[in-house]
Image (cartoon, rainbow, N blue to C red; front, top):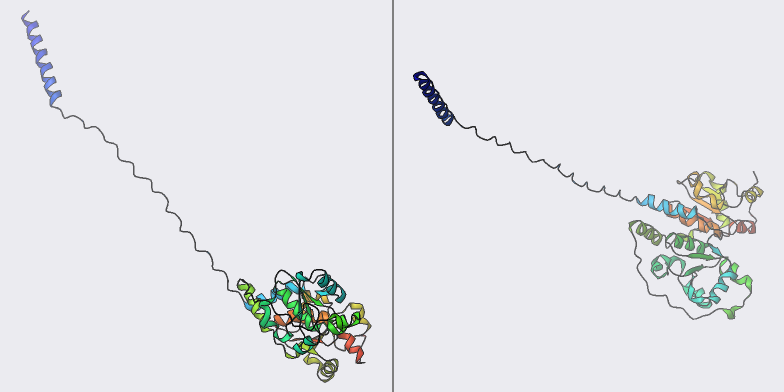
Length: 319
C-alpha cells in the first residue's frame, strides 16, 4: 500500500514536471510566407518614328509625268476635228472653254464665238484661268502650238484637246465665212490658284517655265534639211508616222518610232543633241515634243510635218 502511494506520488511529480517543461519551452512563431515579388510588366516598345518620305527628285517627277502622257495617248490623240469642236461649242457653250492661242492682232480680226485670247507665249502666265470642270479647246494657226498646249494642259490634269488644223487648215476649209466669227474680245475668267501637292507643284512649275518658248519649238523644212546635210551626227530626226509611211519615204537619217510607241522607247532617243520630230502635219509631233521637253529633251517639231516637207519638194529616202 505504501509502495502504491509512493509510485503515485512520483507519477504526479513527473506529470507536473512535464507540464512545467512544456509551458516553459519556446512557442514556434507562425511562418509568414515570403511576399511574392510583383511581376514586372514588359516595358512598352517605343513607337518607332515613321520613316521620312524620300525627297522628290524633280527630274524623276517630270519624267514620270511626261511618260504617263506619252504612254496613255487616247484614240483621238488629244486632237478634235474642227467641225466636231464647233458643233460641241454650239450645242453646249457653257461646257466649253475655247482658247485662241494666236496673236492679239489676229484674234481681234475675227475669232470663234466665245473664244478667249491667250497668245501661246503667254499661256504659262495664265494657267490659273483654265477651268478644271470644262472641255478646253486649244486653237492656233495650224494646230502645232495648240497641240503642245493641249499636251501640257493634259499633264496638269485639265481636259484639253487641240483644234485640228487650227484656223488655217481646220476652220478655213469648212468655208463658214467671216461673218460666223466675232470681233469683240471675251474677258478671261478670274484666276484661281490650284491646290497642289509637292509632286503636282513640280509639274505645274515646269509647265509654267515652258513659256515663252523659242520660236514656238518649230523648225521650217528647209532649215532642217540644212542641218541634216551639214552635220547629221549632231542631231536626231525622229519620224513618228506609221512604219508603212516611213518605209515609203522619210528624211535621210531619220529614226522611226511610231507616235504611240515613243514613250515606251524613249530611251532610244539620245538626250545629248536636238531632236527634230516629224509626223504628218505637225500636230502629233506637237503632242510629242511638249512632254519630251518637260523631260529635258531639246525637242522641236517640223513645221507642217511631212506635208510641209513634201510641199517644199525636199528629198526623201526609202532605205
